[in-house]
Image 1 (tube, rainbow, N blue to C red):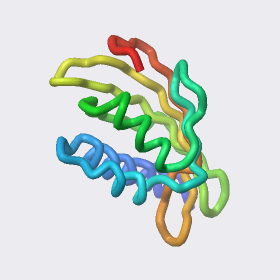
Image 2 (image 1 turned 30 degrees about the vertical axis):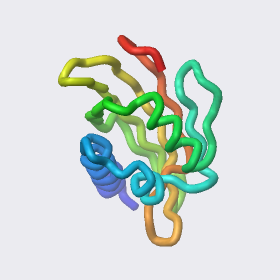
Image 3 (image 1 turned 90 degrees about the vertical axis):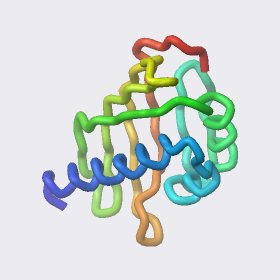
Length: 131
């Protein structure tokens, strides 16, 4: 995949994540099924890694029940035919007030025709909430 197509793919995947994450009536399980696997590992700041969509779902429900996110692509790099690294700037808000900024490094893999997270890590630049 050429660089422009890769960047468009990374942006498209995140536009859908943003839309669904920011839905006040989001279906957490459906979000997990569509973008995570039982092997996905996330590395939240100041927390141990969380593995699998069930535990990731519970982590997000507990720590981010009202946070909305907006992401912008910093960089995308191919890791092979069916995987890529996406690096994003993220702004988190609650009730339209900024509560944190992150840089997030994501590895996406194509599985059974769909792009899903393999793993990701993010940092907290300016947290005004405790996770």
